[in-house]
Length: 251
Ligand code: GLN
View 1 (cartoon, protein in one colour):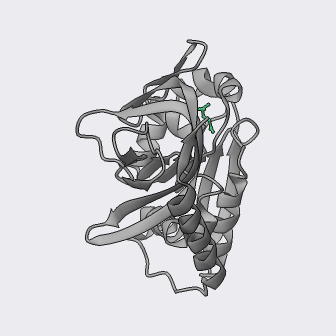
View 2 (cartoon, rainbow, N blue to C red):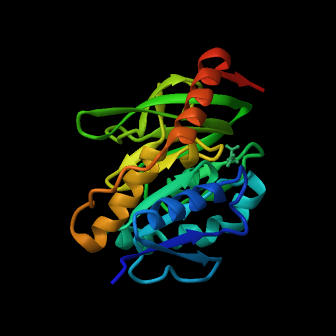
C-alpha cells in the first residue's frame, strides 16, 4: 500500500504571499517521485487540524492578513503542540513563523497573539529588511548545508535564551539583523523568514521535511532515492550569488 503523507496547510486563503504554494508543489512532486502520495488539506479559520497529520504548513502574509487569522491561530496552541508530539513535522514561513511564537506587535502597535508553539516573539521595526539571504544550517548533526532564500519583513524576531535557530546568517538579515540567527528549530518544526519560495531552491530541505513527515508513520525517516536536481542546484547557485553580491537592504 502506498504511504500517504497528510499535509495540513493552515490558512491557505490568507497566508499565501510570495508564491509560498510553490513549497507545497515541491513537496508533492518530490514525494510522488519516490512513490509516496501527498494529501493536501486546507484548514481555514475555525476548522480543526485533520487527524493523523504528518506535516503542518503555514505560509507568509502581511500584517493585515496576519491580523485576520491570529486569534484563531492563538487558540491552536494545544492542537499544534499535540500534532508535533505525535510526530508531525512543520514548516512555517515569515508571517506564519512570527505567529507561531508568543505574538507579533505590528508597526501601528497592534498586538497580535501567537500560538506560543515556538520560543520567540516579534516586534515590527521602522524599516523593512529586504533581500537575498544565505544561512549555514545543520539539520542533521555534522551535516552543514547552505540554505538560500529571499526575505522581506519589518518584524524583528527574538529567540528566547536557549532556543535553537534554523541557521546562522551568512548574507542578509535573518531574524532581526543583529543576532546573526535565522529562523527557529524545535525538533521537527522549522520556522523561517526565507521564501521566494524556499523549497524549490533548497531541495535537501524539502527532502528533510518529507523524511521527518514520513517518520511519523514509518518510525524513522526513510532513505529517499536521489533525484536529478540540476535545475534546483542552478537556482540555488543563482540565489547564493545574489545574496553574496547584493545582500539585504533596509527599506
Ligand atoms: N508582516 C510581517 C512583517 O513584515 C510578515 C511579512 C511577511 O510574511 N512577509 O514582518
